Length: 373
Image 1 (cartoon, rainbow, N blue to C red):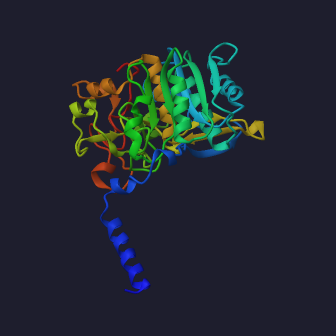
Image 2: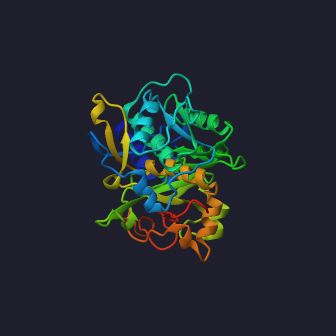
Image 3: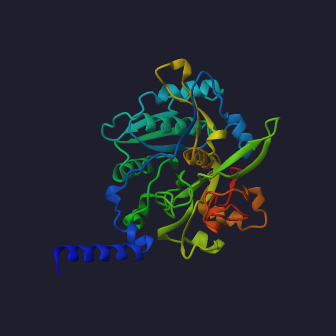
């Protein structure tokens, strides 16, 4: 056989091997060492001289949240350094009549692992996370842990640091990436025996699972879109088209989902668990220092907004856990806990891409209507 003919045989063999591999087989070549997180954040408006997005008062009306309150510490896990975050947080707080939150009064703490460099995209995510965790639970403390880079190992180091700190009740992870073969071995980084709830964004690329949201020890937060009446009251909440969701390729279905019964899960972890406003068009007002300090307001959206706010909701009521969520939703009075999102899609894959009554793979169990689950 000629070298050309032999090469053609090898090419065809590899081609047909790829065609007949399952998605899991293909993904198996991707490992944790290659994991690099990105924050699912969308800029709707920037360079504003005043906040134009949702205010804390407005979102608290939507989700029936109290004006004040908070227990323990909410840990925000991010990457790179934001050297203006404490100043920005207090400009935000002053704008919305929130309590001052500083390192001096013990409300705010920043801990950097290694010597992280600056990154404008991650700094914007940090501003969103820190400011809105404080907005929802203003009496809770905020611990910002900055990983040196968004690599998987560096982020796990930041998570491990946060979970070892006393008084931490919730950990927010507004980032994610593709699943990988070893992820099931990392679930113990989200320990279920320390009275800490872990929250992760489900992603902004529509249908599909991501990590760490896929971990059964994490509460995956999907996205919705809000519309309002002329008087500012909520008109409708539907699934947001960018909301991540689907079935994990590796994580088996946890008991709380088995007992609830989720159609088409096939024995694997279903994502997300809950939802929250993520549509950039109804995004959140965020302050971040820019070159022009008079035009430093942003309007931001994405499922990254939901993780820190759900973490703050847990700090308010100390009962936001997947075990409680699925038990509540299965009860006869589930409407007391969640707004069931019954319309909207995040793709063209039929059942798995459509919101519907009860659990769905776009908005999970729904959006919060209480702080007590």
